[in-house]
Image (cartoon, rainbow, N blue to C red; front, side, top):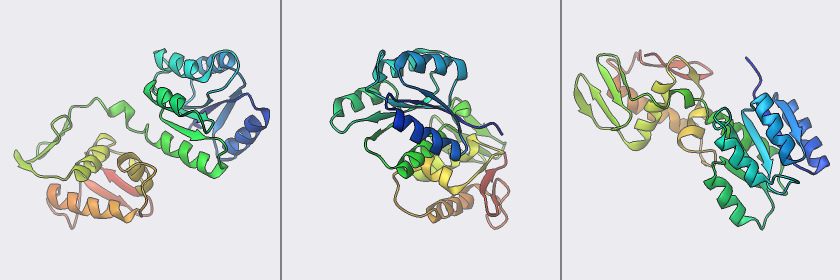
Length: 231
């Protein structure tokens, strides 16, 4: 499996070195830039999965770099985490409106930054499937736009979170999704709680969609890893 690529953009050499070292240690392929022009050049050449983007950089500033990335047809799906100083509240808002996925405020801990990087990258899992209109195996139909589930053409009621979990699993059919990934996608990385909430939701969903919820076929438990939707 190819390493996920991260571009770090910051004009402070010590921060570039610190982030470069820790992100490489975490298993990512890392590129660095200390100004906006170099950042855009490296982004176009390497097509990173995520850009860690300081707003206060020489040349083209961070907001304009964000804008250019989101305008580029080859880069517009790139995730962006803005790095801001404490007093830059307006810049945070502008950055999020331009399409940034998250922001982190200096000074930050490496542990927090790595957690945010991991969470943002996890959210991109289902992007290629997000335009599917429905799932239909003849017995179970999931209409993503209407947020409806039909079993043998009969509508079955789902809570919002039950539907979102089912939708995420179905759109990633055949993939093993661990509990942390499901939590990040449905509840967000700031959720405070344990992963057993996923097991509870899966149990209720199985009661509604499986022919025999004691021996589930659609939503399979992969021991020690997570769940897989077999569509």
